Image (cartoon, rainbow, N blue to C red; front, side):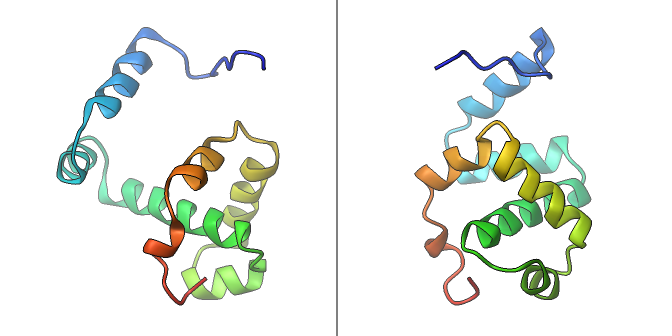
Length: 106
């Protein structure tokens, strides 16, 4: 497989990535996210992960929009990432069981 080359690659981005990777507990991640991002930015990431999970579970755009309040434009962007992106969501799906977080919804 070809080595991945991010469009974001820089020494500063490496520092950010390594900073996130070194966090050991859920609490440390919460604290870091709250310090580095606005609540709106964090909630947007949270929503996009939920949308990706719902798309992966074959939910329709209408089901997703009505359940989450996310616009169809955002759903479309997430779907594009799932289909043509860098497989970042897939790494999460392989390692984290969505059923632990969304019992009945999905």
